[in-house]
Amino acid sequence: MAFRLTGDGPTLWEEREILREEDKAKRVYAALKRISPAFQKLIARGFLTCLPERELALYDLIHRGLQEGDRVRQDLSDPTVAKVNLALTKMWTEWDHLKGFVRFSELEGILVGEIEPKNRVLPLLAPHFAARFSGEQFVLYDRTHREAIFYVNYNWAIVPLEEFHMGPAGEREKSFRALWRKYYKTIAIEGRLNPKCQSTHLPKRYRRVMTEFLSDEEAETLLPEGKKQVYSLDRGDRISIE
Image (cartoon, rainbow, N blue to C red; front, side, top):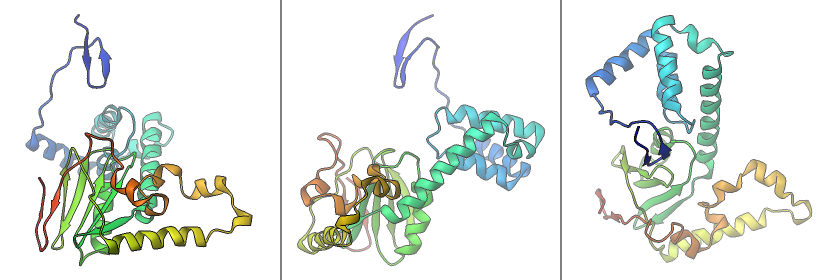
């Protein structure tokens, strides 16, 4: 048996590419709804989690669900069900945090932000920010999964982007950033400073992309050299990507 390296590390097993077949995928997805809408949602949301080897866990649930019905999802004592539910709980917690922790910068009349989530939460965040900023245009980039939400004219789409760079801020944006930092320092009560409690409410991993914790220079050079994305934001109704 041949030994060769893969993108995920060394393996002794032979590899083969599995091509996506849209018609079969739709048939399986429809079958999941016949088991129950909740079961279908469990599987669909499970693919967005950062659960290790989630494909195998979800395949196991699908296989058993088609045979045994919705009772598989309800068996919380089952190790696979418990593992998937725990991953979903962590994903929804991260989604809830990011609704408040995302920081947008106004560049050329367009709101631009970045996040570093563990889970693939952009499909969940897109409807929230599209409703919240319905009259705006915005871009929100996910560094972890290298994709971005583009919202223009009341429509949004998630686009894969290998590289991203926010670009320099104007004077108006810099003044807003300065206000964020001043607000953060002003509301702190020096005599009651509790870094451990603060980290509980605002984990440090979120701070790498939050305005109040970054200087202007850091905000514009967050990604290592060679890993920045170049995009162009045209004035008006069009957002284009180079």
